[in-house]
Image (cartoon, rainbow, N blue to C red):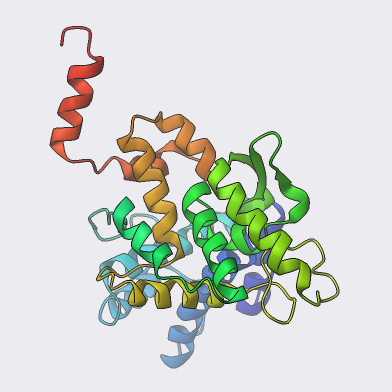
Length: 298
């Protein structure tokens, strides 16, 4: 079996069996291709079936010289998944990743914005332009619903159920979930949709896409990142923010105001509640207040 064929088949497996997004599949493939490049550079003749632990260890040792611990851990995790797939498909009987451990890394807490900082960002938007009204609706939706950037750009008009107070979101693995949406967020979406979007010449295939660029086509991930970066700079926010920062802020603010962790998990679309638990980085005074409020022996 050639590496190229194995990586291609593995991509199909990740898409069909595990339901991963194209971006995730690309990232998994990049890590395996990094191993293949190392083998070719060092003239190590081996295949996905015959490669042994010694070659993997040498690759990891060299990789550790040029990447940080977090990246190294991700590469090791990706390789473990790949070789487990080969065992699952009966190409191998064992894995060369056995006993190879990822470096210990601390859990990185996400940056969050305070409500005041979010208000500053929204206040910095120039509402005298059509793009300004759109950008306000985008920021309000990112923060008001805790969406991933991919979920935002894929949001459809037909998925807005404002009478019921929900929007339908297609998340990772094409999984659908319903997210509550506040009346204030609904208002800004409607202003954009009814007063700005209606006047655009909408491109074919984008008739149902909510947020559009000036040419009437779907916005890209890169464009949303640019919008957020520019607004953060204009509002003089010193933190390194991205579209995901609003998702982190959404979850953190809900938790700080007493929301149930399980409810937040459902709204964020996390498969595991362990992922949601990262938002438990609350200050001690708030935890003390929670204990005194809810414990029966307060």
